[in-house]
Amino acid sequence: MKQLEYLLVGEGDTTIVFLNGFRMPFSSWDKVYSEISEQYKVVLYNRHGIGKSKKANVEQDGNAVVEDLRLLLNQLELKPPFIVVGHSLGGIYANLYARKYTDEVAALVLVDSPYPDELIEQESIKPASIFNFLNHSLKSVEKFFDRYKYSEEEEIARTLAQLRKLAPLPDIPVAVVSGVKKMPFIAEKAHALHLQYQKELARMSSQTRQYECFNSGHFPQVTEPGVVVKAIFETLNIANKSTQPIVKAGLG
Image (cartoon, rainbow, N blue to C red; front, side, top):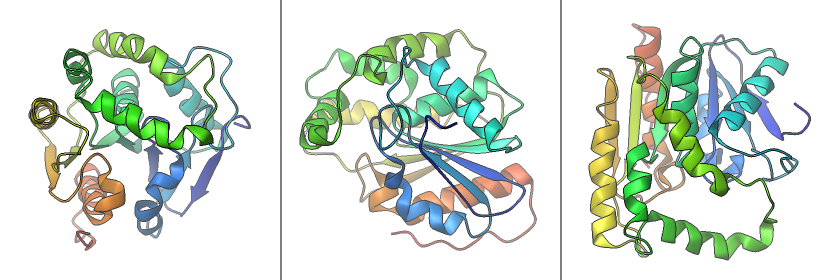
């Protein structure tokens, strides 16, 4: 898909697809994907308006994001089922993809991704919530991004509504990687709520494992990439029902 900047590396029959967090570039996975690509095919891409990807000319709700991703994967001639790894808002999109196209996603790895209901409840305790943190973070990098009409933040409510209309997640392997460390801009109440909802995510499937990153806030793939790598490999082994030993990964 010429409109989206992407990186395709590695070899193998299984493809790992990475979905970035809100307004994040695929370079946010730099400490994770290189080790994964030694054994598997890896796809990273930037959604519309990020990096070299063109700005969108339609609303960027969850359905639009998922369809853009499917088109990209098809044009790259990559065959499902995929292992989908999503950070933050990218985890919401990964969840939507897995529920909407059940035959195309073999497993999920959700990296400090919010539980859908959490986004609604956190709204009630702004500004001392994850929304305030994101807004604060964005101010520091705003010069790198142009605000534009069809942006993801305008469509979060619609994305959540689309997710609620779908059947529950199939009973596929899921890894929930949770940043446990409280970030300085987050109130205690909001932080406790986030940790509570991470436990809810861990109940999405009978094959869910939770990985807690005690030295990480919202970006475990940056601060504790070894835990994320470990979660991906272990989830792959479950999805493949492999008897091969789990690839050893560091925890930092």
